[in-house]
Length: 194
Image (cartoon, rainbow, N blue to C red; front, side, top):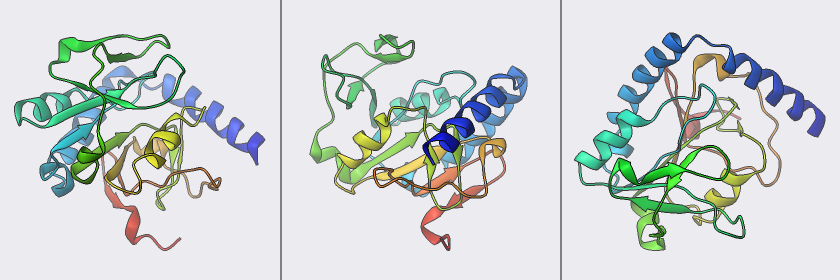
């Protein structure tokens, strides 16, 4: 099974890298527009976003909206020992190039358990199925950080329709997401018959 996940990740990453930037931009705008009217987003006091890599769905419109609405905004940041976590930003200028090529917070204001209940986490992925299973970038970073939230918060995958697959076999450590937003659909994974 590990080999097939590796092959699927490689094929999906290659496909995503070759997508025309104009298509990615248009699809990202449509996906973010759906995210901004999601009731779980509108009611959230805290928002965790990601910095897109290699043609991933952009999150800047969500960032701008969240900051303007006074929501707490968090981004992934690896600690010195590479343990996962979310760190707060107060302005977009606090995002700096990190060790692994993506932007991360310059500050040290980590998310606290008090933020978990009113939190929405936008999650990147390479492939998704309608049951809420996702194939991530590799390394299990998001699975570790999501499991550390003690089953609190709402997890939302942002994906292009092309990233949807029929079925992903989940590993025991994989964390399911609650919703997937594509340019054409809002999928409530909690209602899927899996």
